[in-house]
Image (tube, rainbow, N blue to C red; front, side):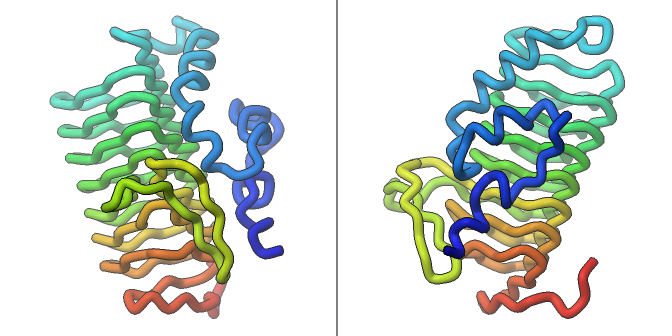
Length: 227
């Protein structure tokens, strides 16, 4: 069944020594984790060494090796790991994990989301109720849309099949090293497979398999060359 491709163990490649490993594999599908992000961040934060992290305000832990520029807003619970850059004008609204060497850029907003590591959301991005896997990159102005216009439950569509997630808010799950072009919109409940490419100005309505290209017309093609 093609929907097996979307199961957490198949879609997200989490190393056994990762802080996420046990937590992620408690789910059948990755979107089942979205309602647990806040509790996960609080639990991990409470275990962090205050010689390596500074705890600020209401459950915000920031690595001593992160760079936080002026004119940013960070609400808890949030963890910001080593090597992260949070640039001027960024807004992190809480229930957020910003993994090592990630970039949260100017006018970028993060809410109830995992950025697992080496994730770049560097210019005018919105990431809400989403998971961005290692090495994922969102081009300038690209967003994860997390709420249907009619406020109904969100359905995941993949290869002609569908799953009712029973979630009212769900943005996107973006796989390892996926590239999302400038000003693209990932509509609610979209999954983008690892190393796939979404062309700029695309409106993505159905999930994209690993190593495929989503064109502006909505056509999805297998990549000729693997990156």
